[in-house]
Length: 411
Ligand SMILES: Nc1ncnc2c1ncn2[C@@H]1O[C@H](COP(=O)(O)OP(=O)(O)OP(=O)(O)O)[C@@H](O)[C@H]1O
Ligand SMILES: [Mg+2]
Image (cartoon, rainbow, N blue to C red; front, side):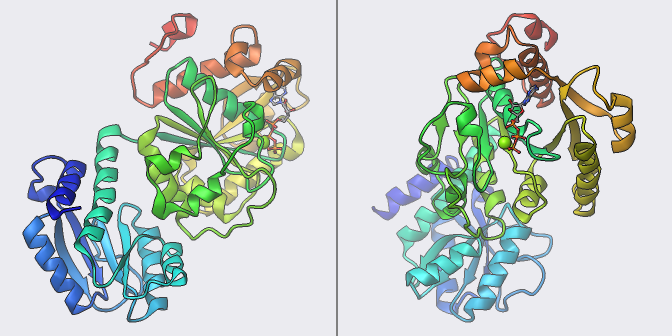
């Protein structure tokens, strides 16, 4: 590829004309003299990047340049690989908007893997080749442009206060309704490390890849790569499934989940996440990066007690209280514990009640088509009403084919 062509690609990614303000800002950590000189010439001649600063030491605490969030931080791994990996990890988790590039003279797979695991999205071999750099910049540029143009999905996580509260039922049905009745571009992500049910509830068979494999490949994320992970439901909903068995004991680098969601967000209007019950790091990482957390419970003593415990835990973990709302599933007027008692125990209002109707829910799961059940099912109607509220809250206009009562209500 000629220099002209690669520059053109990048210009297209960044926007035509490439005013100086559109050049990607770059800082360097531990970058050697020769490489920095090359970057300075590259910046001057192409105006595709703007060099901000270079520090020689790997940083102890903060990101690249307190107060400045560059588009790209280049970390040279050759002086001290361990310190470089730690610096990359800190920058990556503390500055999600900054892409971290590793540069190194070593090109063994182990060295590359180490850098990727510490959050680097690109690995540039020394001496840096102009084309290699341009291609890496083009990927960052096109992500930035896509983000600007498409806006961000509303990421909504659902977690049960204990197993079997109905999380997968609500996520899959809500997802299908948003996609079909409200024409929202919607995705469900099943974050169970094993035995996830979302694909089964949507009657989608034989998943090829699962979500954690996507997270392990953050350096390869692009639209084509994502395509291989998607399962499409007849409602228009996309699903990234959980592993089929229990083979996902994978250790993800810190930040891999939020980095994957950063990539998914511009591509959807809604992303619903089916979380396994549990107070673990993966759940916390996702809950930190989501916009809304629905704590799904039922009117049973142990489930209500867990709502209180989970809420305390999330608050201690600095999750803003207003992010969490409680959903009471399998609701019926004659529950042994009534709504007032529940609200007193959890010290907040119940956000939404989904009626209890086992035969309807089981039929929907069996047929894998929540949308077909909407009209004639009490649960379907409740979910459609709730989905309408969520659609409205997102701030986007209703794009409906639906002229029924919900259509009018949601105007
Ligand atoms: N509103 C409802 N009315 C009646 N039954 C329901 C309702 N919602 C869910 N169920 C039933 O509850 C059972 C558990 O539902 P589901 O698998 O969705 O729960 P879960 O929280 O995802 O469970 P797990 O912890 O195993 O992931 C299913 O048999 C489902 O049919
Ligand atoms: Mg489930």
